[in-house]
Amino acid sequence: RKIRELYFKAMQQNLTLDYYSRNNEHEYFAQTYPAFFKPMKVHPLDFKSMNTTADLKRKDPEMFAFLSQLVAKEKAQLAGDENAMASNWAQVYINLSEQIRSRNAELAINYLDTALVWDDKYLPAYLSYARLHTANKNYDLAKQKLNKATEINPLYAPIYLAEAELEEQLYQNNLVNETLSMFAQEAALKQAISLESDWLLRADMYRRLQDFYLRNAMTVKAIEVGFEYNQNAPDVSTYLRDRRDELVAIATYSRAVLGHKRPLEVLGNLVKQKPQNYWMRGLYADALAGSGFYSFAVDELLSVQKILQAAGTPRSDYDIRIAEYYVKMNAPDSAKKYYQSFLDGRSAGANTLRLIRVLADAGEVEKANQMFLTQTEPKDKAGKIEYRLTKAKVLEANLDLPGAIQLYQEVLNLHSYQYEAAFALLRLYKRQNKFAEIAQLTEFLYRQEIAPGNAVEAMLEKL
Image (cartoon, rainbow, N blue to C red):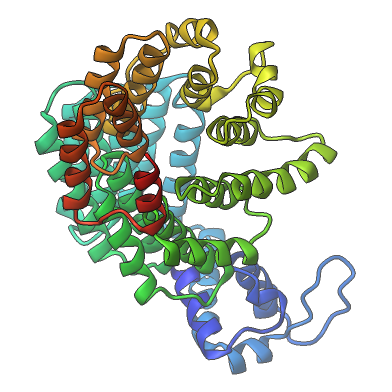
């Protein structure tokens, strides 16, 4: 934490020793530490640093003072003071515990016990205990450790991240109801953000809060938290700029898929700045498709997939997306070219439900049925939504229209911005001449806090 704090300050005030120090907090530390010990320049036979003690004192006196404290601890330890680096030894045993926790929980706990022998107020040890007990479903013990950490320092922000993780697991195991769990998780994440002074950790906490909103179908809040962070986001390092851009990408994507032009343009500009960010390019392709620009979405992914194939690392999720866009373009032969490998046994991994929807829409009903039988409904809301949307597609492909309609309605009840379910319902209502239902559903979409954008309006009119 302290090194990052000093690094960000050095970047803001142009105190860094050289080009290497500006890269990140790791290089900053790696350049200032040898400088602390060198009264004169030494030819860099084995490392890059040619900075001296005088350089460090003159340019970055606060870092010099911090390094002095570190070195004083090391000298005291070497002189026989076994407690001089007690917190360092506590961290060593935390590291040992976390390396073995999945294989030997008892030994992992013993290592944490040893960590507290070295420093009984070392907060990361209590959080490691809590996460270990949470993973082993010893929730009361996990809560005890978090309470102890709060007694030591209630202003230590990571405590509240661990609390949010515990609350999530309590809900996943049916020990608290959904409403109470969502409230507790949101409150804990916001508390962590309000207390955190480390810019990088705070950015990660914002990202976790945004992800929490996305997983629980709180689209408006997910958008708001992204733009809230962007308003005052520090950007003195590449890591901080990346975190800011990720939050903005999610926020703009969440509006773009609702058919809004300006967020789509913002996301497109981000992609141009980061052409090798394949996650972001996938978001952009889905945003294009969400506005009905399927051919542009295909072109976006094909340009990347060509590079990845040349490197021998094509992305399976890109092939599934491309197949999906071709299905929506009513180009069955082109679609099959991209989903055929999955019919032949290629794994879709985490994108299996999306693949099933593609197969159902493409008329590969038997294969869609077989694959869906292997799936189980997740506990989290986002998982429920995707599972039920997929089941509805499969039922529709099997001509069980009442069952499909019911499930599409359930999806919209869980997530009022799930336009894929809305469009499917409108098509089914139209086939059955249910004009009152069409009017009611259209009114429902326009009653939401974020109304459909122009691109979606055009798709609705076409339907």
